[in-house]
Image (cartoon, rainbow, N blue to C red; front, side, top):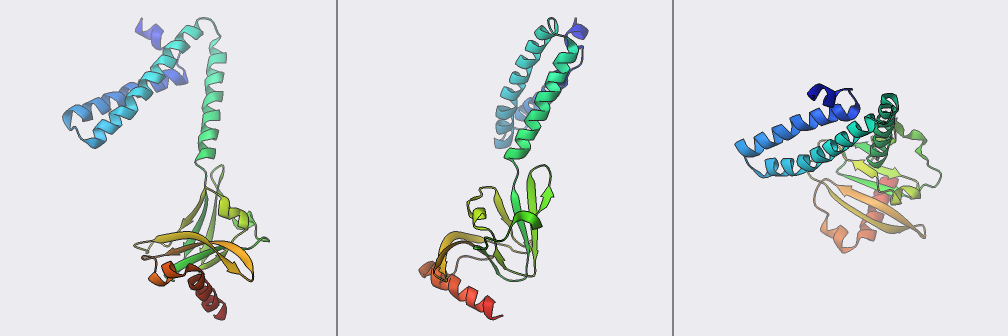
Length: 205
């Protein structure tokens, strides 16, 4: 009876067995060493395991009416589609900065720049490595990208970030100001003047 219930093997049957193993582990942790983590763990695992078993039982019923090949191909197709959706939703455009300077200023003021320099990572993610400079010019469209991630130098112990806009040559320009300490008081008092002074210093160099 058990053999007939488990076989033929499908993706859902494998997931069902794994869910039992993971749920057993969650229950064991919750009873032997109850804490915030074990409680959160079991609250997440339990509904997922129940959902998988409901789908598994439904699949067993469908296997009596639909060919095994159709079921397995459908599951593979759904799994692939879920993988694509998950990869897309978790994709990001990252800029990894390597500099010895104590701050990074990203200006969204270069219409001619493009994502050509970005290297593809995974299916949908992209990465750009910036070295030996702390002044970065990006296309204005990047200012509104929710998946844009600035990765600061690894040796920075603390970071403060402010996103705002300033006026450069009579044109309003968005920027990201990132510093490896708390935001300076002079910046908080007059951010536009502070950014302007940084630009003058970098231009002079």
